[in-house]
Image 1 (cartoon, rainbow, N blue to C red):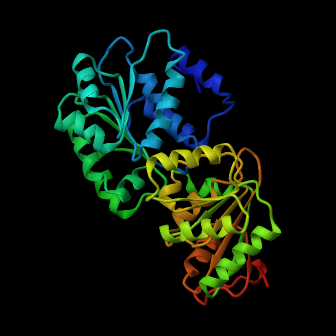
Image 2 (image 1 turned 90 degrees about the vertical axis):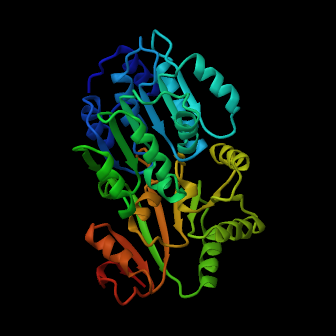
Image 3 (image 1 turned 120 degrees about the vertical axis):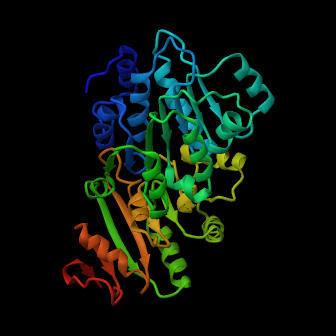
Length: 381
């Protein structure tokens, strides 16, 4: 793929990219031409540069006005996007004004600076961008050519969709809209139909999962106590490089992290009730490999693009198998192999239908639910 600007090529080279990912190959050419995009792709698939490269390709460096707006559901994810955007901008000959708008900043200072000058690329959380662009009317996003909604399903779950719709409606009718999401739930589709025009749809979840060297193992458990017993047995029998344990309830994240810690394991919990400052500290510990077990909910784990995850443990299986894809796709990165361990009950027959439908090999210990496909060749008792 050729770049229209030398500094973008230099930035990509500095990152050490040797090839484009599937989502980048599918999105970048059409995005550079200004086409709307709806892309469903998991964390770690390269989607950030799938929209940043087109944004910088279309950027007019001599025009000091808002040209692109990137909306992210959390401060942390927005901060990560800022770092990635500034890495590209650092290679440009002319300065590119990129500003972050999220919670915790001095609103008065932000407003005064915006009265003097406008950024060229805006990155921020929905509520903050709406406040400055609509409530205070100082962030002039109405002429932006490109709007990106990152982690759209997470924004929907948190309750940010009304703010996002307000932001989109403030921009030009012909502005390019790119939406990136790990899943496309039904409740998100009306917004996509209203807001996009002849969008290119990209879905890479199943292909990404099928191509990874993951050993999928399923263990039957009939009671919550059995889950705890199996998890503790795993910690005694295996020493993971880094294990990500998924639960569906915040209370279970805290309980299991405490249980693991009391058993002498370096374990932490991540969920929506963890304060932003503490979450930042915990993420630093994860990236420094000071922990071995991270117990997390789906939403809290969003944006955790961590190298070296050796094991995914589904303490609770998701109802929506799109989340299974999103979870287990965090291991077996960069040519490495990984292991996905899942505990199932009679309520989880849908999981095996999904695995069979997509021809994903797995092993089972115990009896599968009655409503699950009974393939003896895949089962180990």
